[in-house]
Length: 561
Image 1 (tube, rainbow, N blue to C red):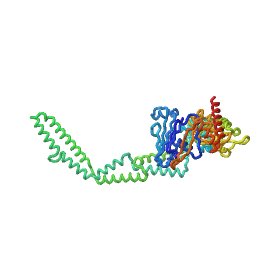
Image 2 (cartoon, rainbow, N blue to C red):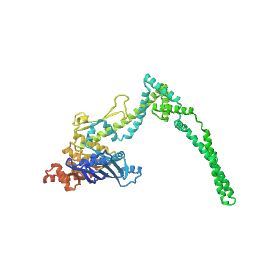
Image 3 (spheres, rainbow, N blue to C red):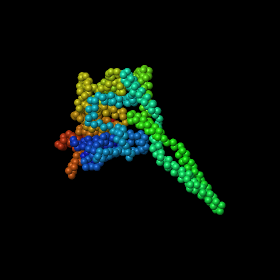
């Protein structure tokens, strides 16, 4: 449940703090006062797309913070190393250049992570969501959601995925003879060329190092000779001088015993120098430079570079291309055997996918009957007793008769008047009927999810009179098991609120500001009277508003009894 919403520098709202309560929360105000900005702020704090246009003119940044009770996110908190607290605080900041950042309980999160959290906390029904009912591609998802068939659909999709993979592989093998010959020739050419190159992992680096050595052969041998002479070969070398020093210190130790250890140290140093000199001599003798070797290195490296450029790959990539080409050539040469085996596998996987699709379809049919009954009952409660709602399930046309969604085409149909044949919602339903059907749909689907708060942005589109009263009663009943936040222009819905906020646009110092004010009973009476009669508020409209408010309180008390 949403317990607090803080909005700062979002559009015309400089600062607002809203504390929704349990039950039905209603936001009312003049058109353009900023009611929908509150909904935009909720969408932003839960990962919705943001832009710099959302930031109030002249402000460096905007911010939204929302506090929720933690029961729905307890698992997420534990998985991310956060202690389970009484409240989950989510913050979203948007800078004037459009960049944004977000955190949950102080831990930074991405926008996609925020959206994943948001779907667990809030379900926002916008002004255009009713139009989604006219999009028949969504109907199957609505039915699967109601029937709790998401897991069944995923299980079916695994079987379908195996079938689709086998089908693609078989189609690849079922190429024409000309195409097969062309591919075989291409693979064979690659194999012959790359095998002839006798590729070896790491060879290029070894050759490059050897070439660099040969390029500097003269300087290298000069340096080795000079170093050897300095250490051992020349008169007065380091080894000769160290040997002489060792002998003199050993002689001196006859009169100063403490020099015995020093003599040993000098002798050890001399031996170390002799070892180093020997290694230099061995390396010098091992060097066998010739112009022929250098030319061979250059030729081999040029060959490798030409192949790398030709195939747009490095040394390891060339080896991988060789293996792929060998495999491709082998598949083509043995494609007939492979095709027969794969055709047999495909038939088995097609049968498995079809059986899984039929099992899913059976569950959909059962869910469709229950959804029809529940929607029909809900529509009757909204003064639409003559409206018929039908979930039509038909087999998919064509072969193989199933795709990634199963073997069903799902459409919602309705008839607006008794005796009429149900037809497509897009052809029959008015705006008010769409809004009421969507409200019933949300009511029914909300029983199966864990989302604690439902938000309706002007669910009253095209609704008035008795129908408006029934919508208000439906929202009141829905708010007994979910927190409901509703932006509305209808006095019937406003009267049914447990918590009522008034959104008002004001001007100060040449700037526009939007204020959000919680209303007490007197404030509610005056606002309900305004919703009825506009600025023409009289004692009669006030009395009527008070009577309507009392009637709403009585209705809710009777519903609880």
